[in-house]
Structures are given as C-alpha cells and as structure tokens.
Length: 115
Picture 1 (cartoon, rainbow, N blue to C red):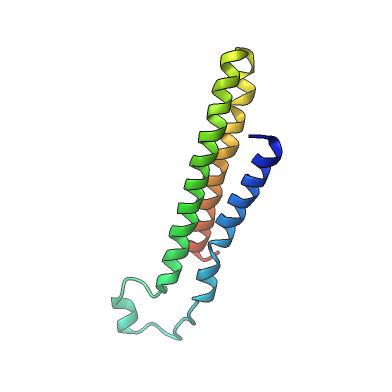
Picture 2: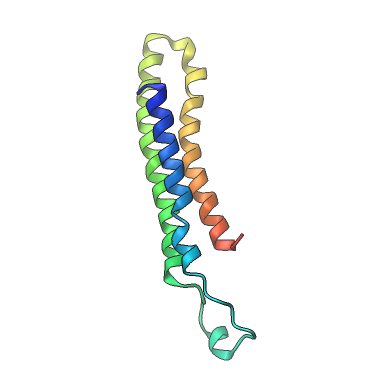
C-alpha cells in the first residue's frame, strides 16, 4: 500500500465516521416543556435514528480500523523480517490505524451526550 493510497483510505474512513452522525441531527425532536409521567416512565425519548447513528459511527470506525491495521500490520511485519531495526518506527503506523476506531468512538460518545 503506497502512502497516497493509505492517506486516501484514511480520509475516506474518517469522513465515513464523522458523517455517520448525520441521521441523528435530522431526527432531533423538540424537548417537552415539562416532564410528564409518560416521559418519566419511558427509558428514553430519543428517536431510533439516534441510536442507529451511534451504532453506525462505531461500526464503520471499527471496521475501518481493522482493515487499516490488517494492511499496515502485514506491511510492518514484512519490513521487519527484512530489516529488524525499523520495527519500532514502523509499529507507530499501526497506532495511526487504531486512531480511526478512536474517532468513531468519540463521535458516538459526543452523540450520546449530545455535545
């Protein structure tokens, strides 16, 4: 995988994670003026699209991170087999792939807390 194709994949994965929150913004309901007994009795007043947006952001983030770590990890192991002294430098790129999952988790956390 070349540098340009990795950066293209990383940008696409990041955009998918960030834009997976869009359904939650369209499904925002106005909050009731005062809580009623029905509102207190229900577990949540959030629409179903809100929970789908959270699931999609985590799902796409984790799938993208798994793909990135698989591709980068294989390349790192191949490079380390030929030249073991670059293992420490090359393993940092695997951490960059894991960052995609972190972005998905942060988007889901921000959605959950409505930040």
